[in-house]
Image 1: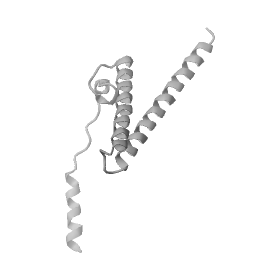
Image 2: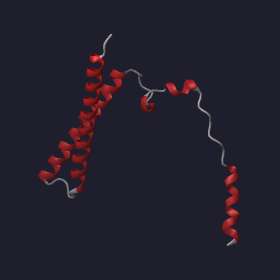
Image 3: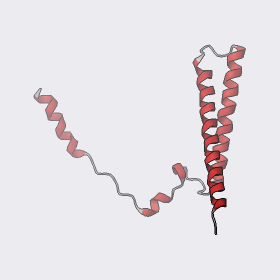
Length: 107
């Protein structure tokens, strides 16, 4: 029992976290290192949505033609595509609501 407690002393070697400088936060969304403008982020999101939808179609086709042995992989791909599309529609609705709210503002 004494040996298991002796291992706790190694916790002293943990180093503190590095502080973040204000200039380091300018790496972009998700730290992708790409352009920081909204249009490139939106294009990336739409291309990922399209890729997810295409993967779902391919997985469904493979299931129907009998190329896939397990039933889980196509179902997971279809659910992932459904969730991705749902998030995209929700974001679009929020953006439209914000736009309409801005248009209703009196100057």
